[in-house]
Each structure stands twice: as C-alpha cells, then as structure tokens.
Image: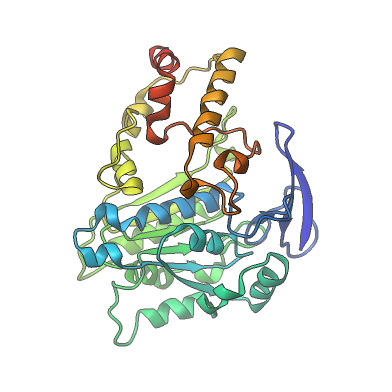
Length: 357
C-alpha cells in the first residue's frame, strides 16, 4: 500500500493511496482495485471516485436502479436495488454505491482475504459493510447461483465485475463461457437489468464472451445488446490513448437519447435540457475553437455557478452542515450547469452563441 503524490495537466496535486503487487513500476502504475484521495484527511471512503472506470460503473448502476423512473407497480418502486459487485478492491466503489444509491441491497464477492483486510485497515472500509462481503472464488459463486432450486433470472438488477490484475488484465481463469453465461443468467427480470464488466486490456476477449453469453440465453426473453464504452482523452486522441473501457449488456435495448437518459436519472417528470441526441451529435463536425470564451465569459459562468450553489437548500448541503458552496472544491475545475436548466435560464446569450457556432 503506497501513497503517491500525483499532478494533473492543470497543476492540481493530490495524494493518492493505492495497492500494488510486485515491484514498484513507477508513478503511473495501475493500482489494484483503484485509488483513494488522501489529501483531505477528513474525507471518508466512498464520497468520490477517482477513475473514469469506477465513476462510469457507479453511474450506470445508479441509472439502472432508479426504479421509480421505469417501474409500473408500487412494489417495484419501493423494492431495494439489488447490486452484485465481484471484486472489492480498496472498497471505494462499494462504499460509493452504499452512500449514493438509495435503498441499495449490496452483495460483494472477493477472492482474496488479504484485499478485504487491506481495504479495512488502509482505506477505512466501513466495518458495517463487511456483512455484505463474501470471500469466495467468483466462478464458484456464480456457478452456485445458477444451480439448485433458486429462481435464476430474479437475483441482481446490476452485476459489476471489476477484477483486473496489476497489469490491467482480466483474470485468465474467468475468461470462459460458463462464467459469463452465468453472469447473464443471474440478472433479474427487471427490463433495465445490467451487466457491467471492466475488461482491462482484454477488451476483445471479454466482449466476445459477453456477446456470446447474451445470445445463448434460452427460455427467457432477451431483446438487449452489448455495448463497449470507452474513455477518450479530451486532447489529440488516438486509439491507444483509451484510459478505460467497460463492456456492458442489458436485458432490454439500450437507449442513449438525452431524454431517455434524463428520465432514467430523474424520473418521468424530468425537464428536457434541449441537448441533441447522441446520434445527432455524432453526425456533427468537430471544430476546435481556441479561446472561445473570454475572461469575462468565464467570470460570468463562475458567478452563475457560485450563485446557484449558494442558493441550494439544506437538503443539498454538505454532510457536515456547511453550505453546498462551502463544500464545492476547485479540484477538477468543472461546473455543472445543466441541472434545472440553469444554463438556459441564466446564460441564454452565451448558450445561443455556442449553438450558432
């Protein structure tokens, strides 16, 4: 377990704690099971996620389990979101899901007792969550769920597999049809039931197995499809620059329209942001605009964002009782203005200028 001081391209630094196996491979070696920002000693595990991969795994889990947005019966709306996580890592992802997914019913499978001990001792994994963790071989667990008298197909709404090794490869012993067919089989019958796999460098092998598992389901209606989601760098990107990949499959067809995405996140009454759909956005020409925003524009955007944060009610304030503005950090220099159509309402001229460009 090593703490590493890392800096991004904007000069922001953070002390990141990670677990590494074998010889030290340098500052940008992949940590086993993710990293945790230790810069703020008062912060607790599971408040934020450091990697694109874990953030996307959590985001798709939250989307999937917004039952009130897509369920028709009151029983379904009130039922717990059943999430299976294979691979505890340092415990960041599991703690984040417990903190941020309402009424979540978590089950965690970890093959190594050492990883559980490390998560508890060095990453402050909450003892209250240890009851959710089972130390067992993942393939044996999946096999046990697919045998006997259990109602297969009514177990987990989300299955997350996040078990890559120190060299970012998927465990060889799990690269087989039985394991992935079992993962698909233990998804619930909820229409948005989702399998999410971090394949590491073995994208081709994992995506082939997931696709084959989806097509091999017998006796169950399956209209979904597999997607390969990739992280792209914002600057001059090449295929080798992909920093994260997730292989995903759902029981129903994926819908990535903006309106459907908002409904899954915020319910049927969600207001439209006015943004174009993904397919339409992909057809537009990419134009690089150097210094598109002036210093005055940036100051205006920041002022609007700070005013919105300051106006947030106590229910949206930080856990320690401070205001949302006080809890806001400059770590990533990102301001989210799509909520409640803030950008459209408060900065209409700037928005129109962007649309007209």
